[in-house]
Amino acid sequence: MGRRTTLERYGDKGTAIGHVRGLGSSGEGAHHWLLQRFTAIGNLLTVLFLVVSLILLPDLSYATARDWVSNPIPATVIALLIISVFWHARLGLQVLIEDYVDTPGNKFAAIAALNLATFGGAAFGLFSIARLALGAPLVGGA
Amino acid sequence: MADRPLSPHLSIWRWGPHMLVSILHRVAGDGMAFIALPVLLWWLGALASGPEAYESFAGVMTSPIGYVVLVGISWAFFNHMSSGIRHFVLDMGAGYEISLNKKFSYVSIASGIVLTIAFWGAILLF
Image 1 (cartoon, chains in turn brown, purple):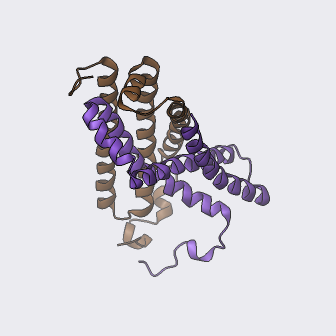
Image 2 (spheres, one colour):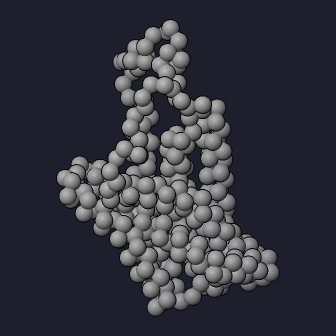
Image 3 (tube, helix red, strand yellow):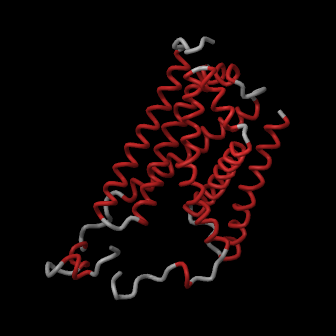
């Protein structure tokens, strides 16, 4: 495994510079970079809201936490937190994979697994908040 | 590996605080993705599932190992937040002078630790 030489990569079809000349940037890097910054701002605001709320809540018992997160503003902010944080984590782990997984097939598989995990995780978080905020009957009563 | 020389890597550089900030940013960020996000989902899922599920979540999180995990998560967040704000400053093109860059690096690491201590102090106080 590991990085291949230019000749191995392109055979006799030309040099590496010939392949990339005139193409400009990769075309997606700036978009990824910007989204990482935008979601970072989202994380900063929403997680600090959660941090301050955790400090100010009188305790973190079931009833207290449930009543708090069921209110419209906390429910909205925590739902936004889920979207922003999972999106940011997906972007960050993608960079980790791109840095350390060299083999194209493994890289594809790792990024596919990452997408499943982050979309699945975010969906579960949003569903949980929706259930709390919209007041589905709870197992074991309230 | 190819026989040709690859770009110089970790071993040839003299370590400085900016390198520590950089690797801690990645460790804290990717660490949160693997540990803090599952804990967050467990918390919300337990709240949505009812008192019994919440009891088992709270039982694990208030055990000694649970507190280690929670303190670790809080440090990872405040550290990643501090070095993330440093990134925003660098993104604006500021703070690249060597002495200032070093100073901000130390401030970033210290800020992560101080905010973690302040957070747990505030949790205990209020």
